[in-house]
Figure 1 (cartoon, rainbow, N blue to C red):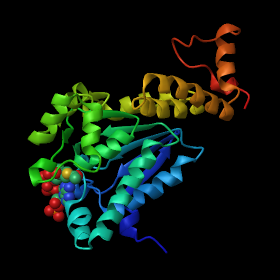
Figure 2: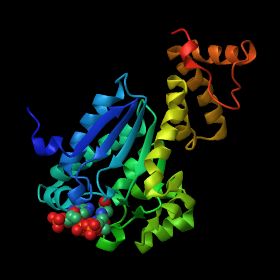
Figure 3: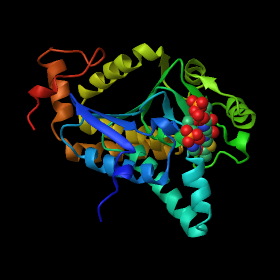
Length: 279
Ligand code: ACO
């Protein structure tokens, strides 16, 4: 079945120098997440995940919003009239692409260029790193229109923020600037909007220098170990490294060789030269 144009257009993307720029593309609706957008986003993620031209994926928004949360009309009102089946279907479409992004093959960066509300916290957390514009506004606005922060948003807030800040953020419905979001742990850093893309490119270029198997293994273990006991984590990390070795038997050996034998780099100061590595 062919996909209608107005669904395809909800997401824009392009790949430039190994960076996939994926954009929420409903600026006139402040990039809120409708069922159409959620379906299209999963298709785009599918298309890019194992594309050899893509090293890093950046999620951002067209216009002055990153994402104004769920579409109150199309995601809530219009699915509720369809009953439980309609509601569950649209939840699965949304949560499905957030989960795919959470365990994505490539490293991912959220570039929060503007408004970021409620349902946008799912994809925000799914991205491995997050950079915001000082001018961006972050809010759990659910309380302002009468629901609790669902769709994982409460879990995201409590994972990323301390208890008092998460509680205040969820109860008060007040927004945080990019700088405040960085101070409270929602994003790594905040910079003026005019410098945001440049900073994200700098980070992406750094990631591009790293061993891709090690990157995928590392991003997964950082997410997993936080839920484990210390001993379980120790054991899991041994097994995760051994599993990664089976996908890349040479990388770490080359990394050791270039430091110990060739003396061409220092791991404490940067990455080894992947181009010299036999595949
Ligand atoms: N759902 C549905 N429509 C939306 C949403 C949304 N989340 N956000 C914006 N829109 C629509 C508006 O209804 C408006 O549509 P119209 O042009 O047909 O009237 C259009 O986008 C532009 O929005 P404005 O409000 O005019 O834009 P403005 O720049 O003045 O304000 C702001 C931006 C603050 C983001 C405002 O749109 C807003 O408060 N949006 C809702 C944010 C929100 O609370 N999201 C839900 C979080 S809870 C959750 O996700 C579960």
